[in-house]
Amino acid sequence: MIEEKMANNSTLDSVFSNRTGQNSSQPSPFTEIRENPLKTYLLGIIISICGNFLISISLNIQKYAHMRQSQLGASRPYYTSVLWWSGVVLMGVGELGNFAAYGFAPASLIAPLGCVSVIASAVISVVFLNVCLLFQSSLWCSLMSAFSFSHLCGIP
Image (cartoon, rainbow, N blue to C red):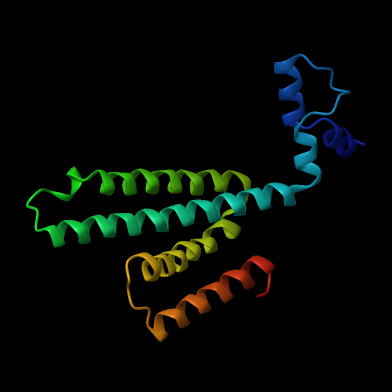
């Protein structure tokens, strides 16, 4: 009896109804999240993948700014470059995305997705920075992908 009452009147529902003045008989927006948490987990995973991809783009932009400055032989510090600062801003946005992802999914799902940043950085550096990708590097990237995927699917 007490369990049923707690299931019907959760803390989030009571807070929502008190703040908005709604009747508790109306469903709150939190009931859908409680009933189907997989949607919020999926949202957290998508946010984390996008954040990690932005981080890898930002690292390659910063590396390109360093390479360009060294080729020009400029004696200016790298932090005066607009391109370098755009990389820093993108990294901040990506890290905020990762931080937000922890609010939607547990850390056991979000943390292994950090390999997306490594893999995307390897691919982007091959395409845009003309870096030679060795067989050993591609092997490690494929192993990271396999282990992260198996962790997300629940394979021990």
